Structure formats: structure tokens, C-alpha cells
View 1 (tube, rainbow, N blue to C red):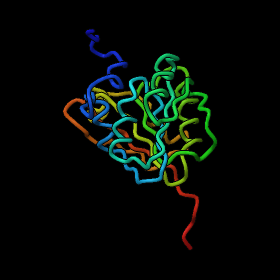
View 2: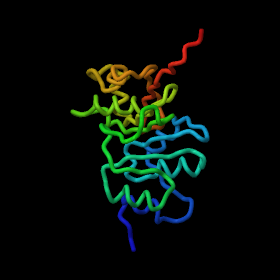
View 3: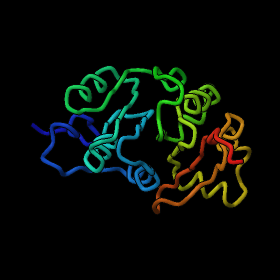
Length: 187
């Protein structure tokens, strides 16, 4: 049986440990800092490749994801140890401060629900944790050249994130990194 390119089923049914990661997925993993026994949330885990890669590299990480695709959520739950729930980013069904790392595509920072999405990602991120947002290079180039109006990255500071910066991850993608301040004050 031949599987169409981009079909999420090939991730879990495919052969052995070989796995194709897209440029965006490689960019997210490049800047995702995660230690064993921490928790990660992928807010757009439709393919499950990022979670699968993280679980292979760090088997003691709690890998979680949300997707709007009911079939993808069911398949990912059946074929991985990841906790995958069918939900939307503006209503993440986990408690406050649940994750050390949240990975998101740039589309979560755009559109009519962008402020709600950013607020939810901030809510579930634990103090000291960070958010990695994958951005196509053309978006980052527009920011670098100053040709962009107020970009969604500025909304991250309004949502409470600090130290918002962006970094090149490949020739095609960059990542915005934002942190949730650790509430512990050194005195």
C-alpha cells in the first residue's frame, strides 16, 4: 500500500527508527531544551513526529500534545506513550504550570484567537520554562529588515512572557524563544 506524502499515519506505521522531520520540526527540536523527567507540550502535534523524536532521544520525558484532528489524536494515543488530546490551543486541558517546554507553530500567534492562544500557553508553562515558536524564514527576514508591522512576537510580552528573542534554526526556519519568569526572587 502506498501512503501519500504528508500522511500522518506513516509516522507510526513506518519502518523502524527512521523518521523524516520537516524543516519546521527540526527547527523546534534544535532550540527545545529539555531534561529527563520534565514535561513538553506540542500544541499542534498532528503528525506526532516531534513528540516521537523527543521520546526516542529522552525516554523519561513526559510528552504531551494537542491536535484538532480526532483521528490523529486517536492514532497517536494508540501508537505512542505520548498523552495526546483532541483540543484547541485557546483551551488547553492541562493545569497551570504543567510543562517545562511548549512547542508551537507560528500560526498559533496569528489570527483572531492569537491572544487567547498565547495566554493559554503562558498559563500551562511552568515558571522558568520556555516557549519555542517555529517561524518560516521569510517572516523572520521581514522582522530583521524592519519591514514588518507589529508582529505577533510582540504579543508574547503582552501575554506575560519575558526574554522574547528569535534565532535562526535552518535556512528555511527560525524560532522565537520566550520564557516564563521564575517567580523565585534571589535576595
